[in-house]
Structures are given as structure tokens and as C-alpha cells.
Image (cartoon, rainbow over all chains, first blue to last red; front, side, top):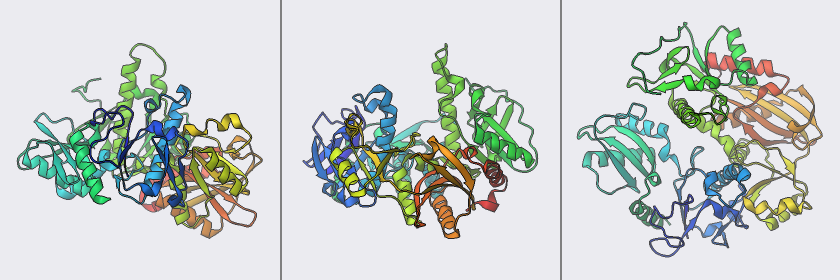
Length: 223
Length: 316
């Protein structure tokens, strides 16, 4: 079972109608409100006994074959059924729960959470700066927005998703590989010889059904 | 809010370290460190959250510039940072006209400053990624166990049956926040059905209750400052009866240093419990400790000031 974790309202932009996921069976979707279904249990010292709840069914965590995370933190607006005065606290606790739980799963998790984001390092400027420095790619993340043309390139599982000029595509793939990030959306200057990195965000910030399909295929390969 | 072509004069720069403090001037730990830096004759500049609307980070191709009400600072010149921003900025509370614009300005300022603290080569006490460990306490306990501490048996669950089974195994059980929101630890009462009905809302962090003496250890670089707290409350912060300086066995002090280093922190407040049998349990680490609550506040403040002014000396 592949688990896809998304924020509230993220299904439609990802091409997921309610209760329907593209690709073969065995892919289940979890929104933060699903953490309010009784049955969840996690022992950080003994995760083999963990339980998760999807669509009201309790499953042992070892049934998971891969997880794709498409949110950085649970937000209060993800929890319309929680009392308004409790939403911020509950969102913070759910984020903490997901961070520790995802960090102990033995199956592939795309990507493992960092201290700052549940979906990994794709939005961490410091990580991209380090990768850019290692590859001698000019890093303009902290500079004012360039006046020259830029290209947004989505990379997922070692592939470029959608059209992109070759210099930007090659640089984006190298950066993602060096940063050890499975999927991201990078903005690079339109420079045939030396594209500069202007911005990097998680792939799902610009939701793309095509990127999701690539990631699901990758998750199945890893399973 | 547009970037003006005419820059403000730079803040007069003295020789030696330049330390940036960020927060509210009256906040006790920040004030204590500021005072200790002053006593050391160090140049400390305060990014005052009360004046956030007159403060901004200017992107420059060479290096960002921090524009303060009193002048500009090239952030590349800053040698150390002590960030303690208060979550709700006083400058933008309320509903007066322009409130939303002001909030956006402050949010952007904070975002830029946090981004800079994440990547600067200056000493940062503590960097945001390291400080964020506070937002997931079960991860801290895993790290502490790897460093040799005992940790209480733990379960995160939103299932009443699982919680009951855990309590049946361990007897007294406490609950606490697993995330970064400040919460008090309480004793699980299985007879409190009204409260337990809400358990399903989200997985809750339960731990076996460990009886013993609370010890708070502030780690600053390689220095440790332990304080014993006598309290009748489950959470000593609610009712500390007596606090006093103690000596830690050296192996425990070494574990404290190891946990702090493993969490990538330069300063931490560790909450431990020493059982009557002499076992040391780790409960949690605070990466932004309110050390002024404890009797050794002056020593801890001075140690943080020393760390900020001589980063090479105490950095683990």
C-alpha cells in the first residue's frame, strides 16, 4: 500500500477526485483530518507495532510499501472539524506526530521529513545553497528577483516533468541529485552557459498531476 | 515599504565581534544576555521586535543589509546571533488601519532573518533547523537514548483502547505536548471520561511516569549548569517549591553535552529526572531555554555571552 499524504484541498489540483487516485490500486490518500480517526498508534522505540487508519480502516504500519508526502506541516485550515480554539495546537501536535512517525517507517518515504518540513528538504534554501556551491552553480536565492527571463523546472525521481530548455533542465537535475531531493520545482535563469538558481520549492507548491504520476511510479519501483 | 535608494548611515562599527540580538528588549533571557554582553564590552545590536515596522532586510547582490531604525548593518559583518523572537509581535497586534500590511511586513522580515540565520557563517544560538527539534519531542528522546540516557516508555495514540492498555502496563502515565506549543505535563486520569472522549482528535503523547527528582541542565557550549528542583507537581514549572545548584556525575554531564551536540544545538535546557535508584532519565530539550527562571541565571547568561563573543572557544 502506497500512502500519499496531502493537505486539505490538495486533491483536485493533483488530479485526485475524492476517493480516486490515478494509477493502479493500492494507493491511499491521507489528509490531516484523517489523524482524527481513532486507531492511530506509534511507539518511537518499537515502530514495528505501529497502527495507522485510512478511510476508517486500521492497518499495521508494515503494510505500507512507500509514502509520498505533499505537505510541509499540518495547518489549522486543514482541520475544519476541530474546535476553532484548538486548531493551531492540534495542527502542531499532528505535525509532530507525522514527523516522528514518518521518520521511523522502514518503507521508502519520499522524502523523509526534516526538522523544518514534513516533505523533506525541497524548500530548504540552505540545502540548495550547499548543492549549488558543490556544483559551482550561481546561487541567487538571496538576491533580488532577476530582471532576465527565468524557467521553472519540475524534477521528480531523476526526471524533468514537462517542457524545459536543456541547460536549465540539466542543471535542475544535477542540483536535485546533489541536494538528495527526490522532487522539487526550481527556478533558473535563462542562461545557456550557466543557469543560476533563483528559487527552489517543493514540487507540490505548483501541484502537477504529471509529477505525481512520476512519483507514484517511482514509489512502486522502490516498493 | 519600497527599498529607498538613499541608504541610512551604517551603525558605527567597533573592532571585535558584532553580535545581533533579536527579540523583545524586556524579555528576561534576552535582557540577561544583552547585559552580560555589555559587561564584556562586546558590541551588541538589538533587532527590536517592537520596532519591526521600521526594520527590514535589503537584498543586495553582494550580501544582505539589515536596515534598523538607527542605521544599516551589513549582515556579512555579524559574527554571532542570539535569536529569541516572540511569536506575537507587539508592533502588529490589533485591528487598526494598515494592520494587514504591517503583518505582512513583519512576516517577511522574520522570514528573511530566519533564512539568513540558516545559512550565515556567523555563530547562531541556535540555528532554526536545530531549534526545530523542539517541535518533535519524540525525536529528541530517540537522540537522548542513543546518547546513553534512559527514556520513559512512550506511546503516541488517539485510541482509547491503546491508551488504556499502555496505562495498564505502566501504572502511572503522563501526557504532554509532542510539538513545539508550550504545554504542561499532566497525569492521565482514566476516570476523566469527558476529557478522554476528545482523545481521538489527534494522537497524544503518553509516557510512563518516572518518580524522582527533577534536574534542569543548561548546556552552553561545553559548560553544564545543573539545578535541582523540588516540587510536588507533576510538572515542576507549575509549582516549584525549592531550587538549588547541584553537581552532576561526570558521565551524566557528558551525556548532556552529547545530546546537545547531537541535536546540533549550542545552547539547550535539558529536563532530566534522577530516580531514587540513581538512574537518569531524559524528558526533553528546550533549544530556547528561559534560563532566567533558575537560580544560576547570571552564570548561564554570562556563559551564553562568552559563547557569542568567542565562538571558537566553546563551540562543541
